[in-house]
Image 1: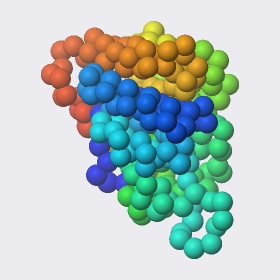
Image 2: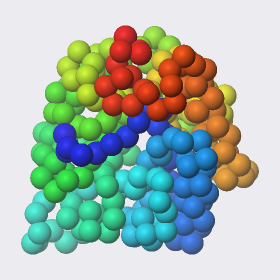
Image 3: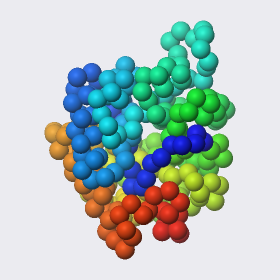
Length: 250
């Protein structure tokens, strides 16, 4: 786990995948940046590798992560994604083991270690509870609990799954926060997921395929903040960051 990385619940992840790039990606990134500041929420954005520098240099509030990187050091490796290059472009972290870019558990661990070496935070995806607990033992910064069968379906994980994944990871390392992914289509899905006890959630198609992506960003981040504030209405603004969330969700 790379030290010095800071993110507070509730947080959100937006994954453009290969839907958006270049000028259009930058325009939406600026909307996300303004909206994240408006609702005081941390947002991870994973643009195309070629857009990392463009987005990082033109936004202030959002956290830019690479969609993936390979476990190699400078030298040979044509076609590979070099960790040092990802960081030099302006990324503060990297997503690993997404369902569309699966790694073996051995590769996941080696790549987390490379990220730690150069100071990149890691958010690692897991399909099953077994995979989630195995990766938690590798000490990533963040985990994504995302059943593959729900990705892009509009069907979200329920309260029991959210509770089980958070508790499973907490018993291994209480410093690792879990994002609940898959099936988030609109603000109501975001609201329900947070109300059910999630610390974070995120989407790809919910925003990328929306008739008005900018309006959907507003709807989702508003819902994220609203649900969190309702659930923790007795806590001072900003109090539930760092270790404080563990007590609040115990």
